[in-house]
Image 1 (cartoon, rainbow, N blue to C red):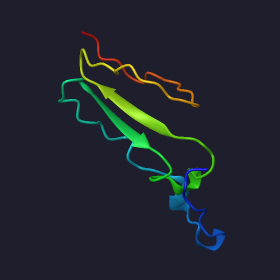
Image 2: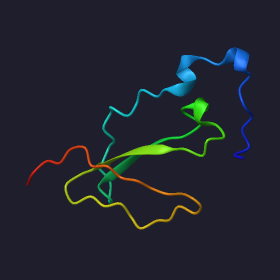
Image 3: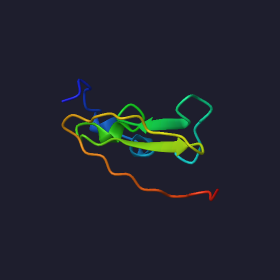
Length: 85
């Protein structure tokens, strides 16, 4: 599916199903004023063959998410925190 082989079930660990980096804010000091932290099968091997990825997006005030597409995929966004102006 993605070119990665499945891990031998005898060597699977709890760490293959978790990622501890989403609590860290991304650096938004760039022209877009946004930072994307992707979490894919490369960071959570247990996602292999499931077709699931997730991201954390941080926005500076006035930051943008540039127009883009996701062929054969969907996207769901949830706002967790807003700082009033």
